[in-house]
Image (cartoon, rainbow, N blue to C red):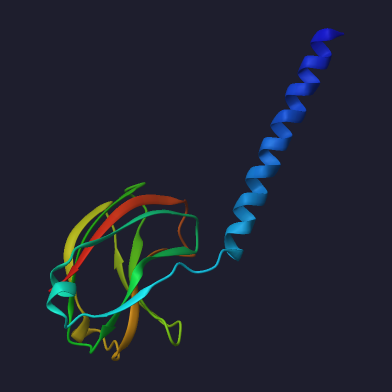
Length: 151
């Protein structure tokens, strides 16, 4: 009888932990956006600065850096991104903060060091947030780290 009570108590404790985890995940959608700062990429200190982003994304989620950048459409974004699982592709994105439109670059193989020539993509001038997206058609969550700088 004592063993049965302990097993029942353990099951209830596990159920509470699982329920808390589900509620915490669901509540993430209601979190207010991070405070951000608009910076012109033409500013030499902004161009020289490297900025990073750690991400742990479910399917069809994105995460963005906390600084917005004013672009004129002629910039190049250098990136170094590593993620797992390596067989899952992700997207680097520029999110227009006024229209919420995403301009994306598909990357794969789990580790990419490259650059994105913004002038070749038709991204209009505006204020943007640099993001990483785990797309809707992905098969798993992705975790990783990305470093960016403007060239």
